[in-house]
Length: 187
Image (cartoon, rainbow, N blue to C red; front, side, top):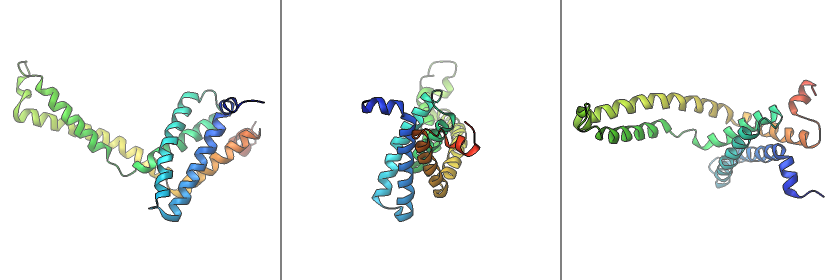
């Protein structure tokens, strides 16, 4: 009889799909029942942790797994991770950090050819301008991530991802291959 660790390592994608699908399904259920409940918040937090694991496992093991399963794991993992952060403005936080870093680094220019940037208003203006450029770049990237996050976290699509994960894991565990193969009639 095989031990549990061996079974889990042999069937890692199936286990990840099943657990990720169940978490996503519970998130949808709790969201529809009461999106302000502690259960919903708990499953979202669990989704973030497991979503990070899903993405990490998908990135590190995708060459060993069925391509459709690896993509489904990565997309569902991203969806679970981004859900609680859809309304957080990371661009502002990042730009403020860049501004502070540039301000500090410009202070080290005292006594050099660029001494004018080491103190006073030029230092503040330079830090502000670099922070503004960083904000524009980060805001663009944040907007792209949020767009995909909103699309994938729309509850009907999240429900489809959850059911897709569960069905894929069942098909793989029972030896029927992949959902992709099942639908397309491939082998």
